[in-house]
Length: 111
Image: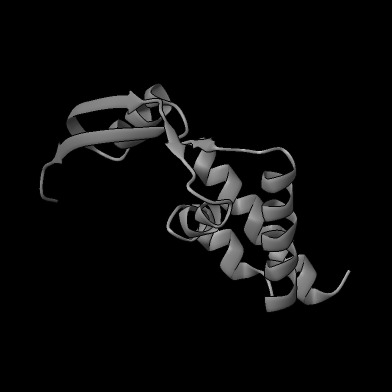
């Protein structure tokens, strides 16, 4: 395994481990409270985002938390991922994607 490949693997593992801390309302609330936040309010919203065309998926991916993962890829790998996903979306006639969100409001006293 090359140094670059090893670094990307470690970065992805770190990103995924961090995301696990806030992928559910209860875990996000706990994370904020452990960080010293008070009056934490967390709400989740589950919905689907319509795709006018398969290319809309790529626009969504670039504007989401996946952007960090995509930016870690080299241009050729990123293009392979884009093409493979667009191909899947076309072949399976995907018309929408999950667009689940967790919102949080909290206060933190100055240190």
